[in-house]
Length: 120
Ligand code: HEM
View 1 (cartoon, rainbow, N blue to C red):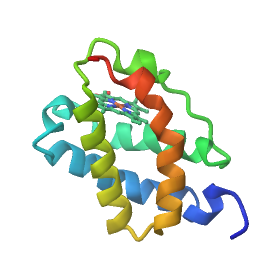
View 2: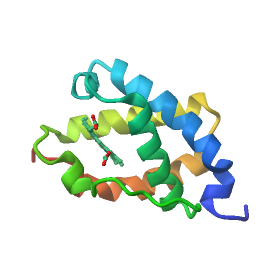
View 3: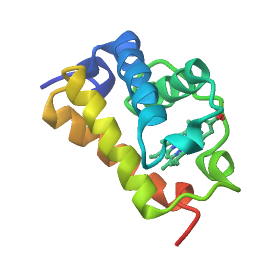
C-alpha cells in the first residue's frame, strides 16, 4: 500500500464520517457515555477529525487543548480508556476501515494513554 495513512483512510471527509459515528456511540455507551453528556458532538467530532487528520499525515492542524490539559480534572481509568478504544474500533468497522489501517490508527493513539488516564 502506498500513500500516507491519511490518503489510505480516504481523506478528511472519511475521517469525519468515522468520528461522527464514534461520538454518537460514545455518548450512548453505558461505560463512558455519562462523561460526554454535556459534550457538543459536532465540536468534538471536528476536533477529533483534525487531530487524526494531522496525526496520519493529512493537511490539517489540530488547535485544541493538548491531551493532558483536555482530560485534566476528569476521572478516567484504564477501563474507560479501553472502552473508548473499543468504541472506536466499532465505528471503524461500521464505516469500513480496513483492519490494517485500524491497527495503524490505534498505534498512533495508544501512547496518549499516558496523558489521558487520570486514575492509575
Ligand atoms: C486516545 C484516547 C483519546 C483521545 C485521542 C482523546 C481526544 C480528545 C480531544 C481531541 C478532545 C477535545 C479537546 C478540545 O476540544 O480542546 C477531548 C475531549 C474530551 N475527552 Fe478525550 N480523548 C481520548 C480519551 C478519552 C477518554 C478515555 C475519555 C473518558 C472516558 C475522554 C473524555 C473526554 C471528555 C469528557 C472531553 C471533553 C469534551 C467536551 O468538550 O465536552 N477522552 N478528547
